[in-house]
Image (cartoon, rainbow, N blue to C red; front, side, top):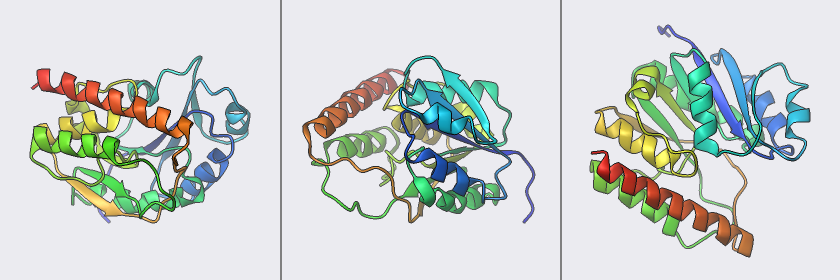
Length: 226
């Protein structure tokens, strides 16, 4: 394999004490990753206590500011040629992120996004996913199934070209639209990853409601940033 460059994985976390250890341990098995950086987004559980026992880089935020903010904070502080974004709740399935790294460093695509298997339990009614997918298509003409997937790999040139990253749930949509508008290529990669799935409790619907309005707001901003 002929490639040069530094591969850095950034893992934004918020209250992931139950899953972060397995997530990190499996990421450490991927030799091609040069550095692991966890951004603790103001966790109020024991996530930090778990992280402090691991031999990794940690960026600590005093209070919860959102996934997008956490990722922007990491980008501003690290040196990388390839950026790997991983959610903290993947557990042992985080080892699958290797499938996303190789197509990018081999120049098969500028960005890869993980395509998860079908959910194990019923979630919402598809409003959030539909809004994200249709929004990306409306602005770029590209039909993607993975617009909400947070498991991604980017070349540095792509990150440098994206000038709008919202602080919260709109981050994936904004980064997808920004990259496609700038002419970069995206490859969706099937993986056997699993993460925490939402169901149909009141709390789950409140969470999806926040997602929906964050993404809607992101799409409105993107409309005026054409």
